[in-house]
Length: 281
Image (cartoon, rainbow, N blue to C red):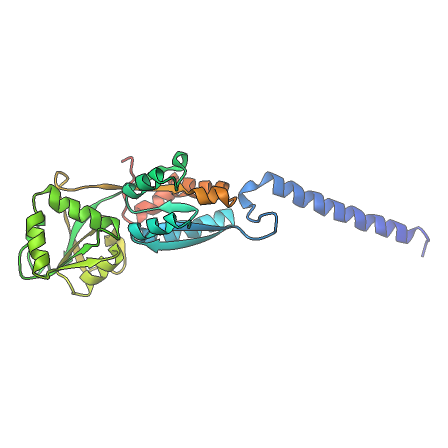
């Protein structure tokens, strides 16, 4: 072997190492959407607080976002009151409650970054009954007839409960509702998911739920929807925002990307697939 051969081999190896290092550095600096590790080499985990009634579209949105941005998303579902309580204790990078009311409270208390707040979809309350509607319920007044149980969200725990109470008050039905409660004919549920479960298992004869739940497989062929006239109804908005904790923990950019994605045209197609109507429509 020629004496210069080892020298040439070493030079070639060093050159290859330098080329690979340059390539990796160049890619990292030009493709910011795939940077999912911090300076310690740990994978970024985005923590989302979401209303339980948003579970179906949110699961799909998260799956698509993870594939697109190569970041791990952890989601905590619960009633809007429940996830707001977690937000107050310092949890969550992104806040997606079932009602704009909770976003307003979060702004007042300084838990979310107001400039990141977006309105995504409408949240429309409806009356849901078994497919054969055995009690002949066709209106809010019919809900309050004696002799059968209905389910309402707990107003202290979930957005649909707070809205249902306001609907009864708006339409002058509060005293009738209180009478039904005294007879033990009202079941309170912590989440809208539980309301649907009470209904499809026959534990109650009617419930006030969000319209979009009819797209859930648990509801197919088991319930029918009775719309509440617009003049009687209280339609809500589903918002999303980045929390102050995302900024403190160095996850501001990816949290902003998530909010932008779930409110983008691509994201709205997924919301619409699951029965939600865009906020701007």
